[in-house]
Length: 76
Length: 265
Ligand SMILES: Cc1ncc(C[n+]2csc(CCOP(=O)(O)OP(=O)(O)O)c2C)c(N)n1
Ligand code: SF4
Ligand code: SF4
Ligand code: SF4
Ligand SMILES: [Mg+2]
Image 1 (cartoon, chains in turn red, yellow):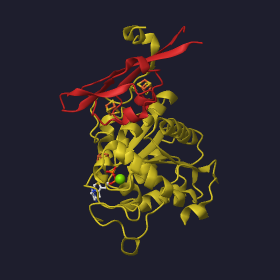
Image 2 (image 1 turned 60 degrees about the vertical axis):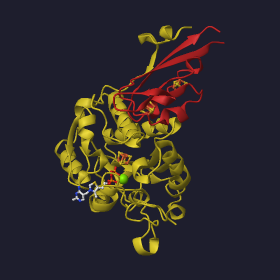
Image 3 (image 1 turned 90 degrees about the vertical axis):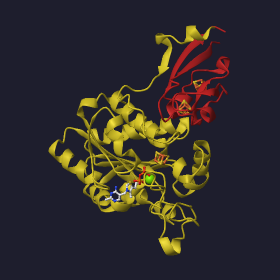
Image 4 (image 1 turned 135 degrees about the vertical axis):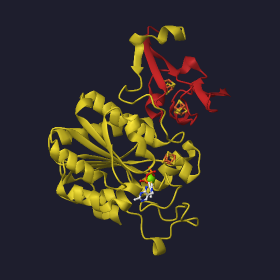
């Protein structure tokens, strides 16, 4: 059976570091960066990229709409 | 598989709707207003009605909604959005007209406009963001503030004896013959976001089919006003707001689908 692999791209300069995406990710993919962006916010990033299934939960709850989601079906 | 192979245009499953402008939202980090904005614009994009939709921004934190939503918009005096929407819709019955209002706007200063637009059955959509507080002005008590809930004007919690009871205006308007679809949703969890998107879509379809007024309440957080982190505020909302403001449809196709007597007690 094919497995879903996903990846997110965060517009780090527009991320406000609210962490709402983190609690909405079912696979513990997202973490907050140590570094801050130009506005002084720690921004979201893929801490465990291998976990992401591309479900888009994080993106649809992001109040600032800064997450883009990609998904592919792999063979195994 | 390498991440770079996944991040390819053909694998795209979600991106921000182009119907939101590039302006940075003025909302606090984690505020549900932003999520609600995106949903309204996604629905308008999906229905292909960007050129035919006119929104009315309120007074409140979402006063600048016209900067963020890439459609024709007007901005009404505090609480008057349903009256402005009425005028625009009656002049342009073929346009889609909606208001976007907070609880202070819709259920305090604008109570008369809300109730009468609903009672007249104006063929508009009302999106109502209930965060139980006046967010913009510094977290004062709103009609929707829960009993015992602290705000800057109820530092010891709302006392119903002195300050009256929290107002379930959504259950009230559901009882008026002019409302055709009345629902209460949330946008803090992915599952809720998906349901709210469907509800907003249905509301615009009600307007398209000229059935009457569609009223979509979104129970939301005001993490700044409630003085919590965004995730704490969303948990607090589930624990305290949802029992009093239960989620789900209240009126569908002109028929009340909830036991309102029970809800109003
Ligand atoms: C006529 C008038 N009265 C009072 C105000 C002050 N005022 C601005 S926003 C607001 C309340 C907004 O609360 P709400 O509608 O709940 O919006 P939120 O900011 O919580 O989204 C008030 C009382 C005003 N701008 N105009
Ligand atoms: S929900 Fe959006 S704004 Fe908030 S931390 Fe995640 S990516 Fe950043
Ligand atoms: S797409 Fe789904 S699995 Fe991937 S980071 Fe977002 S919420 Fe987590
Ligand atoms: S004050 Fe409250 S309602 Fe206003 S933007 Fe901040 S969190 Fe949102
Ligand atoms: Mg409010």
